[in-house]
Image (cartoon, rainbow, N blue to C red; front, side, top):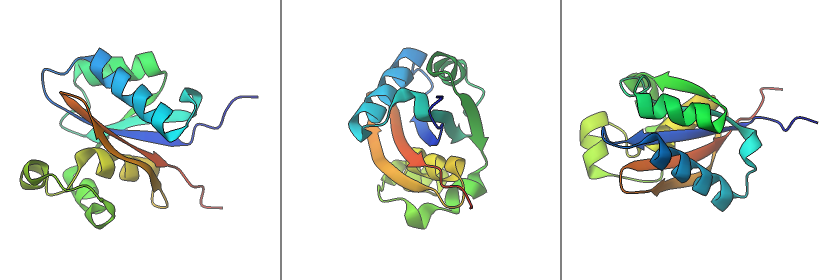
Length: 133
């Protein structure tokens, strides 16, 4: 039986970050949360980063789709974002790009299951998709 693909990884990353670093961080997040890699449905990030080669390549390696999100969508969930980065808040109007992207990418009823974790050049958070049934 195919595992249910009900987890979205929100990802923030610097311009010089490699796909290998993004993949390693997402895999670390999944392991920390006790989530099998086969449940990963998508990588989500800000729409101005979604076309970056490293982000797209990481999704290919992880076997999932990519989601680019507009600034207003990310800001709409700021009250549900527990991590506060002064720099990201000033640049993007949200406390954590990774947490906001995970929540928005996973849908209206999403629940954060892993708050932001970080590597040198990237951040990752995980959200669980809940069906509307």
